[in-house]
Image (cartoon, rainbow, N blue to C red; front, side):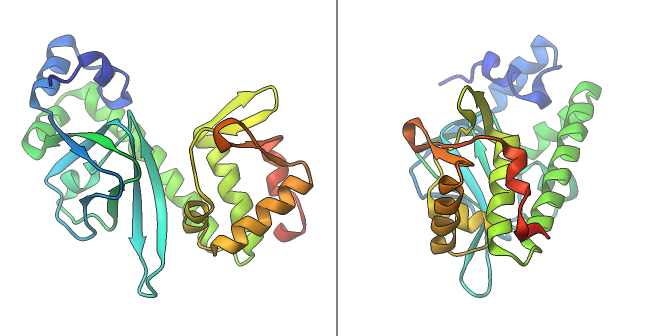
Length: 229
């Protein structure tokens, strides 16, 4: 199936490419389907490919020596990953797994390096890498905080910023996250997430909306409280 250029145009790093350049990228992409739970690539594998999520959702995670998984990011449809390994030739310090059935486009290193010669693509890529650096610093701040409740609150606050949709009831986190997934992001136990969410619901700071999406009444209030003193 041919990749639609209109889909690629919605991705920030491709947005400024001329029509002929976008069509060349579409022709170069290889489409693969993955089942839920299937690994797209493992930690320490040398990347020779950039990946684009055409449909579905994937997670980026690391396994600690203790055997616990820490989720570093989720990539929904329209997002991409693997580009950093193509720039510096280093291995990816994480595994990427399909959270749901997903269709992934791959772009090989030679085509990616050709794109880097085009100024609009290079500038857009630098902008997106800066955004990812800022997200990485937020993750460091989260994982170094000692209070478990503070970690959960910080995760919810970050998800409101990255995946939140304003509604009359509050900010809806538009991701179908389980308590276990939230726990893996925050670096706490699933039981802790369940307990903290229960407290936040009791305080009318969080509610459960349609499709079991979490709704945060006022995200800034998540960062208030004794756990941050």
